[in-house]
Image (cartoon, rainbow, N blue to C red):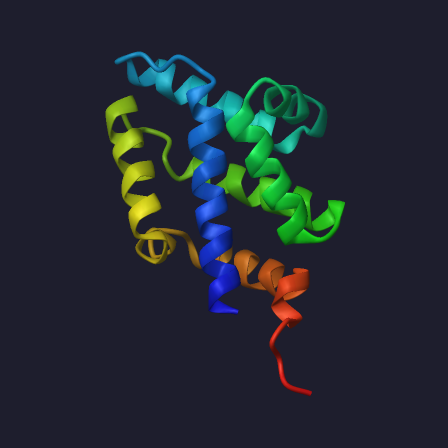
Length: 140
């Protein structure tokens, strides 16, 4: 299950970085906060999210990976909701700090997980248990 959690963390980081990059970040922290909030809304809204996915080859690939990994639309939506929630942890950061956090999280997803609230980690664990890949390799 640790592999699923690591993959999920990596996907959340990719989601956050792709969707955040869709908005121009200014040096102003208010602009960065607004971009984060807009990204959070877009992650939760399937129609808006699909529009953003259609506009990016990278986002299309991430979307395919998420669909494959999550196994159903309910799990998929829950992963996007969790990504939105985790992105909220980054409010108050400058665009430069946000980019650094995302870059570091891509290098060390398990270190990134340690920055999450206990509730966010529990949501990820519960979601990971329901993903199709969680049952692969288990002994009867």
